[in-house]
Structures are given as C-alpha cells and as structure tokens.
Amino acid sequence: MSFATAFTNKLYACLICRSKSNTELILETEPRSIGKISAGRQMVEGKINLAGQVFNQTDEVWNFKTNKKDFHNKLHSFDWVDDLAALASVEARRFGQNWLYFWMNKYSSGFGPGWTPELTGKRLVRWMHHYLFLTQGSSKTNLKKFNLLLARQAKFLSKRAVKASVGLPRFEALLGLIYAGCYLKNMEKFIEPATVALADECHRLINREEIVFSRNSQEILNIFTILIWAKLALKDSNWNPSVTHLETIEKLAPILRNLRHSDAGLPRFHGSCGDVDGQLDQALSNAESREISSYETSVGFAKLSNSRTTVIIDAAPPPMGKRAVNADASTLAFEMVSGQRRVFTSCGPGYLFGPDSSSKSRQTNSHCAVYLDNQNSSDFRDIEGWLQPPKKVIINGPRSVPKEISNEEGTGIFEGAHDGYVKSHGLTHVRKLKLSQDGQSLEGEDLMIAIEDSHKRQFDKISRKNSSNQVLLKAAFHLHPDVAVRLDEENNLTSLALKNGEVWIFNYSLDLQLHLEPTIFFENGLFEPLESKKLILSTDLLDYGTRIKWSLARAIDKDLSVGDLF
Image (cartoon, rainbow, N blue to C red):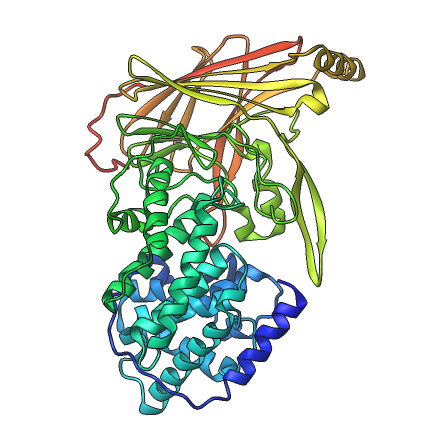
C-alpha cells in the first residue's frame, strides 16, 4: 500500500466518522463463517493466539505495539469472533462483547490500523454474521454506537472499496459493501455499484492463467468463499448476481475440487495452511456447479487420486518478485493424504510464527522435494520496504517446468521436470510418481541429470571445485506429526503408522542412505510449532545422471470408515 493510499484511507475514515447517520439490521443472515470451538475455549481461558503472537491477558492485545501486519489483520478483521461464536457460551459472548466495546471506544473515530478497505469489509461481514451474538444483552447506548459504526463503515467502503489492492483485499472490501447494502437499513443504494465493481474484479480474475499471483490455494478458496457469500446475500435481498459473478464461481469450483485432498484440506504450499476447517466443503456445497476439472493441472498443481488416496504436486514455477513474500522454493514437491490422514506434507506457513520461521519453512528442504546439499531450487533475497522490515522474496527460480499426467490401466502417473539447478550445477530434476489404481501404493523415481553439453560442462566445473567434498543428492519426506515412524535398518524398511490404524511401508534402493531427522510442522492457531520427523534419502552425486528410487505401500488393508485407533 502506497503512502498516498494509506493517507487517503485515514482521511476518509476520520471525516466519515464525524457523520451522525445511523442504521440497523433489517434482515438477519446466518453466520456463514466457520470457527473452532477449541480456539474459542482457549480465548475464554486467557490463552490468546493472534497470528502467532501469544498473550495471557486481554488488555495486552490492545496495548501491544508492533508493525506486524498479520497481527493487525487478525485483530481488526474480527474473524476471531467466529471461534467465540462456535463455542457459543455465556462466557464466550461476554468475552466477544468486551473486545467489541474496546474496539469501539478506541477506534471509532477513524484512527488505527483497522481502517483499511479490506479490514473494514471483513469486520463488517463478521459483525453481521454474528450480530445477535455481539449485541444480545447490550445496553441501548452500546447498541446505538454499534449501529452507528455499522453505518460509518458502510459509508467508508462506499468511498474506498474499489481502492483496495487488486485481488483478495478488493474482494473482501466489496463483500462488506454488498453485505451493507443487503442487510442494513437505508444502505440499499450501495448494492448496484458494489455488484458492478465485483463483476469487474471477477472479469479480471478469470482472465488470469494463475488466478492469483501467489499461487496460494487458500487465497483462491477465500475469493471463492467471498463470491458464494455475495451470491447468497444478493439472493436474500432479491438481487440477481451478475453473469460474470456466476461464471467465476463456475470456473473456480472445479479448480478447488482438483486442489482438494481426501481429508477436505488443501495443499500446504506458498503460504496455505492446508487445514481449512470445513470451509472448502461448505463453499463447494453452495456452488451449483458439480463439474470436475478436466485439466491435468489446476493453477500449477498436479493431482493423482485413487481410492481416497491423494497426491498433489507443485508443478509450476514459484511466484517471483517483490510480491512473492510467501512463495516457497517447492517446485516438484508433493504431499500425500490417505483418507482423512496426512502422510507426507510440507512444513507449512512459517510466517505465522515470525520471520525466522517463515524463512525456514520456505526452503526446498522443508518440502517433500529433492535438493543438492541443502541448496534451494529457487534463489531468495531480502527486499527493503518503506517503513517496513526487510522481506525475503524469490528473485530467481525454475523457469521451465514441463509436466504430464497419464493413466495406465488405472494407475495414475505424473512426470515432471524443472531447471532450478541448471545454472548452479548443470542438472535438471526429473520426478516420476505412480499411484496404483487401488490407492495402496505410491512409487517414486527422482533423477538429477545433465542433459545438454553446456550443462555437462557446468557439472564438470562444479565437480572439480568439490573434488575433496562430494556433493550429496537428497530427497526429503516430511511426515505429519500424527505419523509414528519406525526404522528397520536390517531389512531396509521403514514403517509409518497412522492414527486410524493404517500402516504404510517405505522402501528404497539399497544404494541409498536413509536418515531420520527432526522437522517442524507449522499450522494456524497453534501456540507453537509442532515437532515432527522427516525421512532423508541421500546418495553421492557421481555422474551426469544420479537416480533415487523409493516406494510406499499400505501394509494393512483397513476399513477407512473406522475412526482413529490412538
């Protein structure tokens, strides 16, 4: 956000907050946003976690000074109300109302970090989703002030929604304006301009090959959810969504179905948390389209799926440049889910726990990927921001990522390659994955190969430099924290036990070395990252072509309808 945009937002907020207009809810909407009961209970008990920042006292939250954008977004968007409303106890309501009154007393004049179009839009939506939860038992004075703030935020959005950053922020702002027009008294005039602006944003969205620059599947889901909520709100007010609005829903639904793991979650690449708490299934159920994607890949992700086993591969170049603040060096990394249980996964969104964790989670060795001596397949660099701490972005990475998905007698086959190590070592990574028809086995083959003569000369140059210290080729397999691992070095086997009783056997070529190393699992809502394990297959890089072969097979054929055993 530029200085001029930020200044204009503050100016409009301060001017509008001097107005005396009022409103009230004329049509009650169901609370469409989903929260976690466990998170709501923790908040009531005084264990508060906002974007990785942990507090034990309520007042510390409001007096905490930081320039961490994620913290302010979490606090001022009011999406934490979803968790309290999910708990739905008297204590949860009292807690939510206290925080609401604190916000009204401190920020109702238009000052503070919460007066941006996207945060105002998100806040307005949450206030209307949980209107009764937040107002039941309130005094007339507080209720009047609450309704006054609803009107002021609606007016602010009418002036600034279309000035929000292109992409998810603008969709969030426009949804708030549509909600204001549909559910608030004397605000109907905002519906038409908001739907026209939303149609323009939809047109811009569906004409982009990658849908969103970040390639974050959770960001795509959030935009899709906004479009669904906007459609439902307009129908509540007897307005017809635009044709472009509906066409965008029709386009995004099959893409998200193709990105959906069998546990109803999303892949954990480029800032996505993966666990979306039913949001994906709820949004898809409200989409009239039941179409399945006919494309081999969706926004750069390839998928193999058989008998409730899913494998999703990051099969496209990573986002690069100043906006790639959460992009991962994860080209050709994969994740695997069996039924409701994740087996192989990525470390996840480390940015939730600070810049150090963010940097670590974005490395190639933090994914189920192949790499050379802990070197990334993409190059990172710190970019200085105006009045902001430095941000690490990808400035160079794989440019050519050819891929193909085929099917042989029911066996799904993915074949892909990337040139991320050509410049440094002259080597191309080629990966082949085969998922059996019954979903009971996954075979993998990874090859590092020098293809062209210039690549071989580069490889020879690097080999001479490292003549005393051999370069190691490694393949990492990050296990979900719930997976129990046991090594049988004598028989060259490794067993992976899932909580639902399934046991998978990991096998590998005899010429490879296997090590079990610690790793970290980052997830939204955790007070601290979870410890986990990763399998590392390694071998010396000896020639123009070095191969790693491995396989995973289910040892116990278990009824997947049975719940967890431990």
